[in-house]
Length: 312
Length: 253
Image: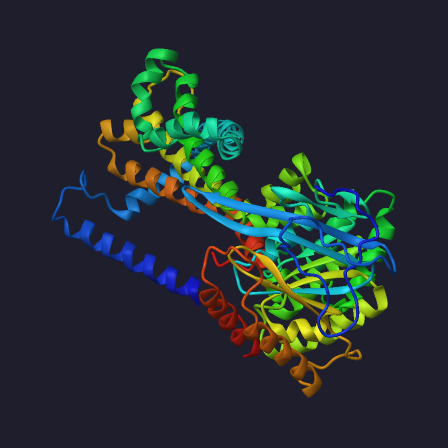
C-alpha cells in the first residue's frame, strides 16, 4: 500500500479540515502538496486485535500526516484506536495493513527520534529524578558523562524541578512526576514527542499549570507533538489541529484546525466556543464511514459520553 | 521506647520462667532454671566451644545459602523469561518448594554418605526453590510500562535486563532472598540433627546430643543462640536492603 508517498499535507485552513480517514477505496487521502514535507505519515493503517474468539477492529484505514513542528491532538472515546495509533508511531506496535513513516522511512522499531510519554508517569522508582532523565541519555551515543549530566540538568530546570534533581520518585506529587516524565522524554532531543493522555490522572489545577508549561516548552523547542486525549477542551487548548476519532472500528471522523492565539487559557470563552463547535459537529454527523459493526446511534452515545467527561 | 517495651517483655518472660523453675513443680530435667542456662552459656562462651560450633554451623549455612542463591536466582530469571522453562523447571520448583527440606535428608545420606556434602545438599535444596520462585514472581511483576518506556529510550536485550528488569524486581528478590535465608537456616538445623558426621560439630548436633545427655539447660541455651542468630542476621543482612527499598521506592516494609 502507498508506501513512500511524499509531500502529503492534510491541512487547509478553516475550522473543518480536509483529512478524513477511512475513505472507501482504502487509498491514502491525498489532498494538496504544500508547505514543509510531512514529518509523520500514517497511510491507510488498519489494525485488528484478537483475544480468543473476540476480534476487535481497532483502526480502519486511517490516514494522517503531521507536519514538522506542529501540535496535533487525537481525540475520541476509549476504544477508538487513538492510543494504538500513537504506539505505532512509537514503534511499539505495528499495523496489519498500511504503513507508518517518519521522514519517509517506515517505522519498524522504537527510535530516539520519537519519545513517548504515558498516562502513568512510567518513571523508574529505583532511580532519582536525575537518574530517570539520564536513562535515555546514557543510551545516546556521542555524549560524555559530563555532557549527559549537563543536558539532563538543563531539562530538569526547564520543567522547573532543579531543586528536586536528587529526589526519589515517590516523594513527588503526580504533577511533578509528569514534569519529570516530560523532561525524560525531551532529554534525548527527539524530533517527535508522543503523549498518551499524560495529564488524565492529574487534578484540574495541576493540569492547567501543565497546559501552560507544555505550550511554553513547545514554543521554545518546536517539537512535533502528537497528543492523545479524550478531553476535547484539552485538545483545543493545546493543538494546532484536533483530529476526532470514532470507535468500532477506529476511524478519523473529522478534523478541526484551531487558530487561537497562544498561549491559550483552557478557561477562555473563545476556547470553549471551539470546543462546543467540535462537540456540535460531532452530534450532527452520522458517523465516520459506511459499514460499521455498531449502529451509528450507539456509537455516538459512546462519543458523547466521552465528550461530557472531557467537558467536566 | 520500643526497645524498652521489648526489654520489659523479655524480662517478664524470664522472671516467669524463673518462678516456674523455682517452684519445683516439674523436675529440673524438664524445666531447667534460667540461671543454669546462663551458666551453661557463659561456660560455653568462655571455653570457646560455643564459638567453634557456631563457626561450623555458619560456615555450612553460608556456603549452602550462597550456592542456593547462585542457582536459584538464574533459575528464576530463566522460568520468568522462557515459557518452556516455566512449564518444566518452574512446575518442579513449585512442587519441591512445598517439600519440607528435612525430607531431603534420607536421600542425601544415601547419595553422599555421612559427610559435609550431604549437609550442603539439604541446605541448597531448601534454599533454591524459594529463591527461584520469588525471582520468577518478581520478574513477572515488573509493570510492562517500564519496559515500554525503556524501549522507546533505546533500551533492549541485556541492557533492559540489567537496568530495568533487575532493579524493578528488586523488592521481590530481596524478600525472596530473605525467605531463602529462613529456609536455609531451617534446612541446616534439620540436617545437623539428622546427619551425624565425625568431623565438624555444629549447633544442631550439639542440640541433639544435649537432649541425649538430658541437659535441658544446654538445649534451651543453644535454642536461644539459634534464635539470636536469626534476629541478628535479619538486622545485619536484610534490614539495610529493606531500608534502602523503603527510602527509594517508598515501600512500607
